[in-house]
Image 1 (cartoon, one colour):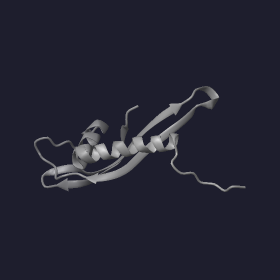
Image 2 (spheres, one colour):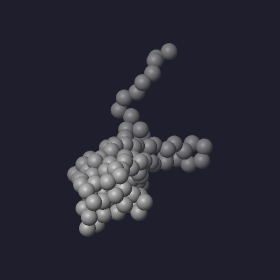
Image 3 (cartoon, helix red, strand yellow):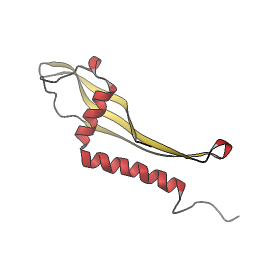
Image 4 (cartoon, helix red, strand yellow):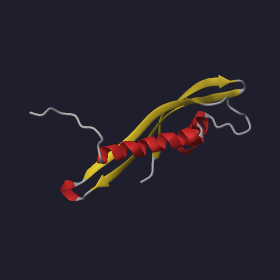
Length: 112
């Protein structure tokens, strides 16, 4: 499957310089899942990550006020602020969580 990025919330400030209603922080989630088996024996393995990132100062040339921001805008801004290397690390970690769920390297319990 593919990692799905979503926006949990946006923090904003009333003004920044001459701009109004400026998004400053994106709180994001990223998740993926894989279902193994079918019917009653199907098991869904999931992986996820959550974080927040502060955006760089708003640029008046490509500024979008809060009311005009789409989730796609916010995800693109968050990924740009996080950086492509770290986005890859996050997505790799999610894949590793799914692999660990499918084939655990350790177990918890008691012998009785």
